[in-house]
Length: 394
Ligand SMILES: *Cc1c(COP(=O)(O)O)cnc(C)c1O
Image (cartoon, rainbow, N blue to C red; front, top):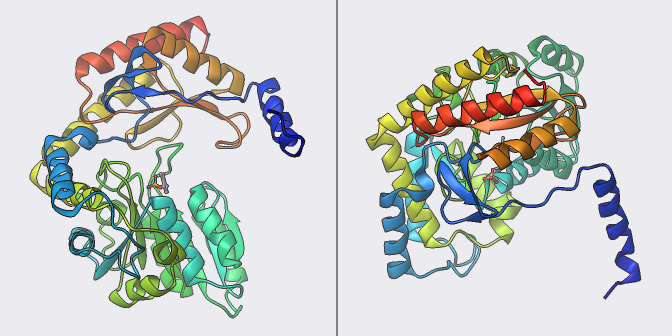
């Protein structure tokens, strides 16, 4: 039944259709696997963040089931009322040890961790200095904090320093914030230089390591470990939804910062905590990171093979340094068509256009995992080559 008061939403949607920006959700039938069934078609899956294949790891599944049997399916309350369970505390301790920080707090998602933390620690009088390609959850947190936001061009350390100099005499707290691995380009932040700037100008240094946790550093400890910057990044955010294979986000910092977030981070205060099975799954995942380092080795071996092969075929893979490899084609309509034809031929690589990436930088994004076989990756490359040539991308 049409409703006049909602007609404008239909109009907006039709505009998206006209601009060929309307996207139907692809539906996964079954488990998130390297070869999976989406929309009734079996495809080589280059679109998940399931870096280590943990979404279906037997140990994680067993622990989730065991936790349901012992603790039930829900926590029944927010953390600050009756929803803090022993297993939530155990997970926070595990993460703190893993990240080599004093303490950690777990949020319902990485998005909630970023937005909730930035909004809690800064106020109207603050200034946030942020890389232009930082994740949407950081941007939302910045807006919620009401602090002034100063954006520097992607990875431009000199431009960042210039901003810091300009605001050096200004009162109010300053927060320098960057992603560790950038989600659309797969490049790594210049964290040593940024941490040095933060120290020089007395800013809080905050890092969003969603795509680096479980991927970079010893046993997947992340960007801080990759650059050996332990103790020099004040606040680290990670996700439990990507390499860890389940759902959630966390913040690692000093004990008092974490206690402060217990009191002031709004998603922590006003949204129910994880079901115990999710916490149990994540605990098991951190054990797997330490017990099965070969998973990360395989992830990187696959990454090197796939990235080098794409380059040899003549694709533009931008500045990627990690398992996220974009294939940049420029025009958004061409990227959508590339993705569509790849899917028809058996490869799922999502196309991404403006506003997620800048105009003229449309692309498909590929992510290899530890669980792809060489044969699967080779098959994907052959399909990429054939469709790429047909569309005159290479
Ligand atoms: C995915 C992502 C998040 C959000 O994490 P979720 O756990 O999925 O909410 C935050 N920051 C970055 C850089 C991400 O890529």
